[in-house]
Length: 478
Image (cartoon, rainbow, N blue to C red; front, side, top):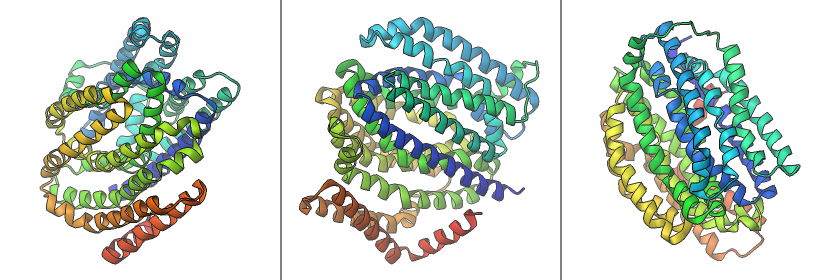
């Protein structure tokens, strides 16, 4: 099977997986939010802040290195597997002992047991880390997606049942661990790979330059961008964190369905062609165009209809999430484009550059969140947006320069989308000002009229883009 065919299949299956997982997460997230209080989501947010950070250490970036490196052997994979197992186990023991101290930090006694259960994910993930990266390296996404779809629907269903039966925060705690456990069992069964009883430190060293820089950039970015969750939980409490984290999760839904899919599939594909910069430039410009075509209007729409969406889906007890979701959705416009920087740095093996560049911006995030929290969760959201606006052009320009792409070239492929987005925004804001009808009718009208306005302007200014997309859809579907 050719690389082009593998990429096409990978995009199709990964998009199906991402949309399915996000749809399940959104639907069950709304149902769970109606059954549980914001404080339950805040408690889970406190645990995940530390556990998700620790997951960066489970494979020390060597999983991505296995994908990026051209020539790898069974000894590379086995060495990384045993290293992952050792690190995953040590991390769990560390957090098991650390749990009481984290509990005291937040003044939340419930965190002790939650941490000790949720952090079992470290060991579970370590078992299958190499198996899943092997599937990704070979662009065999179909197996991975089928397994993940099953685990997601089963885990969320059980979580909802537990919430309905009154298990409270534990109904949320079980979901992530169960997804990881089911995925691990089936990844190990269907990956057709078994580790040998061999560990070669020399093979680890071969991967360390890429892997450790990859991990280092992720760690620095993680703490800076999640410092908002830490300081909200510490200063403002679990209820405020629950409201903020739910809004942030909703904002990420369009981002995950586009930029994340592209990064997952195109990273191994770009890595295989990393020496052909003109080819990578050509495909990157197409990628940024198609991602922006859908992600930008979705983010803007979410920002404008946040009131109707929150009150209809989540209910009155979540109404304080409305302005937070609006602010973070505007932020999502910038995040959608910047998220593709990782594709450039990682596929070209420039993780050391990404790591160095990330230090100053991430320090600014921490300063901004520290100042913003004095004005509540709205202050944190505005500070997050402000830093992204200020840093967007320098961060983006530095990444695309590696592919010999200029900002003008990007603007040329996005100009029609930008014009259409502004036209849609103007209409929606006008409707916001004049409409005074029921929430349901208001939401439906905005979705229909906003969508029609956007695609009308796209058709006027980028008719060729619509035809290209139509052709891509025909080739994309079976």
